[in-house]
Length: 328
Ligand code: 13P
Ligand code: SF4
Image (cartoon, rainbow, N blue to C red):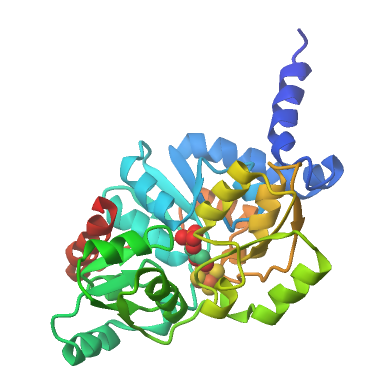
């Protein structure tokens, strides 16, 4: 065999997962160099890339080692056999990975990748809530800072919020900072939620009118909504679940036509794997997730920046809240 053939085979294999989404020429022109460099750097640095489901397809399908929703990323972060973790996602996800791996280097390719929910509440706010409702357990969505987690009894994600809340066995909880997630879980469980007016800037923009209009335009469409959407939007959906829950739904039920009421890249990543399903795309972009690009990941692995650190005085308390969640 000549020497070119294995190289070509390798290149073909790298392109194949995204071949339904972009032309080979565009992939070569826009992404191939960075992808090759990242794969080489991962080996040199002994690094793994954890990618959230909202990452763009060239990151999600071409360079990441572990993909998933916030819960899967937190779980997988516990068992990694690598010196360096690159979190292709937003800052709170990188903080969670660091909480589970204090001895490893955790990099976030752009530390400005925040989250409107995490920014909506401070540790001071949580202390005030606890003082106002003594004895009521505090359940904190992982979309929060380490300082807020440190004030918390237990964390949750959209994938396990119902289970976490029910595990407490109480009639009333403080559930922060996502008001809509809390109300959606209240509707599912009947447990009273004391909420905080934090919202996801991506999901709060969807409206029930919009969903009804899409149903009129696409008769028979299956509607899946993230629980960060307002309850009136979730009420219009056929299913509501975390990003991983929505992905599993499509893989198992193989709907003919589906509308994902969530961030744009979810449909792209799923469309790459499910040619049998047609995706209607009324999506909203998360500007924070979109700060993470292939070139930012490459730069991060080249420079080993930006490293995520956790203040020592918060570490143990925040980690305990995440560990309690993972034990449920
Ligand atoms: P998931 O945990 O469902 O992936 O959601 C994380 C997130 O940021 C959604 O906006
Ligand atoms: Fe935060 Fe919403 Fe972006 Fe998720 S999609 S990271 S909840 S702003």
